[in-house]
Image (cartoon, rainbow, N blue to C red):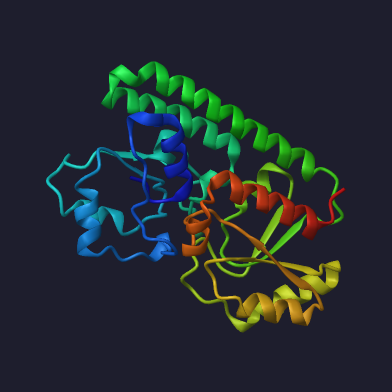
Length: 266
Ligand SMILES: [Zn+2]
């Protein structure tokens, strides 16, 4: 069971037929500020392994795990598996799945963890993990090539700062109206600064995320006489996306197309 979509999809691919992978959060639920209900606790008690990101993404998780006897729920913390750390005193960007190089490392650690739980599957887990790593490396190469030659390098985001890892990896800059979590509303001053920034740089594209109400993106786009394109953070799926059977790789392919369009890439 996973707290975010990428971990669910990675687990499904690595475990193959030996496990079922599911999301702990219901469709559309927002992971940063989620409030687990009693039935979510019951769901958690049935899983053999809980996959989570850590690094502050799931502030509710420690309290949820306290409902169980110590050691009852086995957990895999993806950010800890990377030994991922930032400068002390600074918040770490927990959206590590948007760095496809880090995903490769997570997938390999995950195969090792599954092998500890089910040693008979070790060879299959390793082979599946390497196949998935290959897909992630191909995705990384597609982003590298697709974003190499663009008119703009600034991702102006009427959403929260989820794309720092992605921007850093491909030489882009993220300018978001929310912080690392989408719970604090942006101030009018932040919006004014974003408008000035876009006008000064001739930016006509505002990126918005599904999980955040569109009013802010629409306002900003109107002010700069521009348009809104959607970027998927990939935390979760909406009910509609779930019904369409979309997964992590589908969302990332849509992201690359939106970025190439919005940044004017050749
Ligand atoms: Zn987030």
